[in-house]
Amino acid sequence: MDATEFTEWVAGNQRQLVRSAYLLTGDLHRAQDLVQEALVKVALRWTRLRLGNPGAYARTIIVHDNISWWRRRREYPVADMADAAAVSSDPDAAHVVRRALARLTPSQRAVVVLRHFDDLTERETASILGVSVGTVKSQNAAALARLRERAPELLDLIGRTR
Amino acid sequence: MRESELRDLLERATDRIDAGDLAEAALAGTTAAHRRRRVYAAGVAAASVLVVVLAGLTLGGGGDQDPSPAPSPTPPTSSPSSSTDAELDALLALPTPPSVDPAVIQPMWDPEAVADLPGVDIGLPADLTPPDSPPALTSIPAALAVVDDEQQLFVLDAAGAWSRLAYPEQALPAEFASPASALSRDGTRIVFTGRSTLWSRDVRGGDWREVSYPDGFLALEGWQVHLEPQVAEMLRLGRKSRSWAIDLDTGTVEELGVDLGNTAWGGGDVTVRIQFTGKPYDMRVISWGIPGGPERSWRTNALHSLTGPAADQQSLAAVRGVGSYGEPREPFERNGLIALDLDDLSTRAYLPIVDPNYSYTDGGAMAVRGWLDADTVLVEVLLGGAETGIRHLFVWNVETGDLSRASQLPADLDVALASWIFASP
View (spheres, one colour):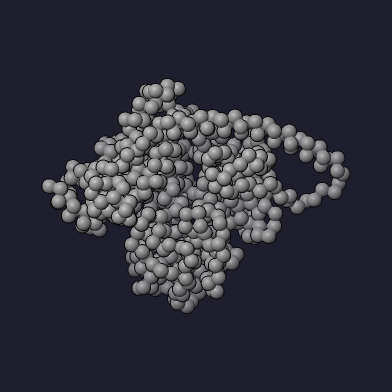
């Protein structure tokens, strides 16, 4: 495999992957573990993936591993302000986001992160999650409705950014 | 809310996260993986020699063979940081399952076609969606199923009648956790995890009773619960790698030290554990035994990842995910449902499935619910996503390969089943 090429690809994508995984999990250490494991799998298949879309492959691994982990554990990390300060220059915002995302199901949460943080299209999101585009649309609508209903503090923060 | 505003907020909430240098670690990981494959291959060769020697000794020993299962070396369970060569030696000394007989591999099946399967009556209605306003539960001999919509429980009895069971007012779940409910496999006892205690109810009568959580159990973080069929009062409850057995009548607690997600309890106290050692060896081990008796273990890397297991006294069934993502493969190198004979861990049957996105295996959308008799298992598969999809329950006869559709319910409802009292199809 071309290690230089792989290293360059990782350098350009690793931060976004870890941030995305953090929003999926709410736990920085688990996010780093998920990304690390996914990158090993990408590296093992780099020769084949390099001409395709290694980012989509990595996200597929991360999302599926996380949902699989959640189904086995059914756990949500408890929010902690010290953790929030470690991930954001605005700990209040990080704390609110973390609590709000924890109110979503794993699938809704994945749709929100892939669509609104990773800027993927509905089709790309559907491909990664292994569901139809229609399911992505309905999951996204349900997630945003749940955030409006159960996380009004999120709306307050969005208002503050204007 | 506007989507651009949400994106800005998500950006701001993670702007200090820095990934470091993950490429170097990933490349080191691939090197370790290649090295492990070489060590593993060498180990397989060494173990083969050992088997030949032992077989010769056994044959030379005359007719005094002990028919009871012999205990095999105990696989290490310590953390990766304390791994030693002795641990690797112990892993490599474990026997491996026999090669898979091509005759047991069945035609590939697409779970998307589950709704087209012929229907079969195992005592469940074709649709497990509860009615709008069933009467309150008073007393029934046993429940076939308990459906949980996170607001209340709906109980289905053997005559097909539904009743409603409200959570106690003070038992509402903690803010960040879904309540987990379980039904004993004989159908007589329900438990669920409340805010600060467990709650237990006999469907034959009585009220909800509280049982304290074990020391060290953090109620805010989520859980799994299992009710044992042969001891209806025993609850196994886990958090991360910690798990406990709790006698619901006495409150007696015993820490178990098993991962509930990868453990199956069969009849007669049989316990099957599916372990993955993690780094540095990445070995897979399956062990089974009964309390106080010998435990038998096999090194099962060749079987790849097994999840969603269910056991009876003779067999283990599980969902099998293989590691070569997206490449064309032979039937046994595709994901599928596997049935293993616990006597020697030989493969009784393998049903390859179409799983292009690994959603049934890595995504956890398929799991074996239990054995209905010695040859048939009840399997759940989720189609269409966890919110708007449908959970289908189908039956797989591992001997004939016959598949049939048993029941279904909306994906946003959780169902616990009293699998031991189902009829065999």
